Image 1: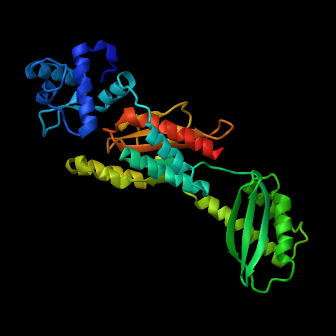
Image 2: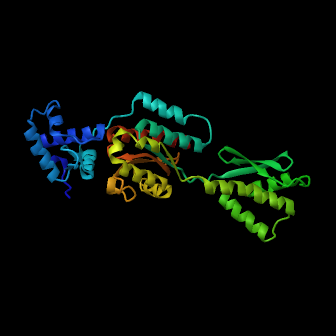
Image 3: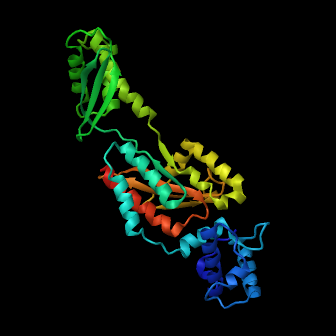
Length: 347
């Protein structure tokens, strides 16, 4: 397999190679010499075109599927096209507005992340993916407010002013002041710390008997903190939307590849590990087919871009996953713009 630079191809070979790749990306089908002969600007006979196609195939840039006389770009050919020939098309005003509008909807950050993956799926006709940031916000206080017999509202206030609510079960025979005592104790240990830091300290104090809390208040402290610890542990590391988009007309002739891709997407931990490789990138990264271990069998591509918080720290990755005939020129800047917009939202 060669690492031939695009400049080593003749002008005629470059033109034909570009038309084959663009035709494949547009239709998902092999492109034949008759189709190319009818394309504007070549002024070559089908025989001359076939000769160039044979040359490009010998270089490992094109391949001929058994069921067609046409040619498809190989993964190596797609890489050459992406790195040396592709001219990106910036998102349209409508696409930018759609992205910013969807991300601007009120609600928790998880809702915005889900909306992001769904939107990318709609705009790309592929699967949209977002790797959820592993956030550990600094906390200010936790209030336990009585609701009904057996229920209380746990209100967690972040140092950044964010507020989250959870309903927890509490004993029906709580003594007066137990909720307030537990709230004050938790808040005193939460102030300026992450939940993990506060939880470690509080549990050590309770286990060592270094607290004046009575048994009822100790139970409330454990319940109040457990709500958020379980919630953080169960949050998905990856949100995938739009996998059904992969079952388009072009997929009918390649159902085994699509089945393999859908199976790959079910393995969210592995997908998250793949996206994690994009965290260190300064810009959008493109993985084509066997360039990534996870999608080597399904021959799929990934376009992924890291998004950052207000301090410039990478907190997650956003992208699309689909067949190798993804419209890279359109999707690369779209994923990049989405990552920038999501970073502004994360703050």
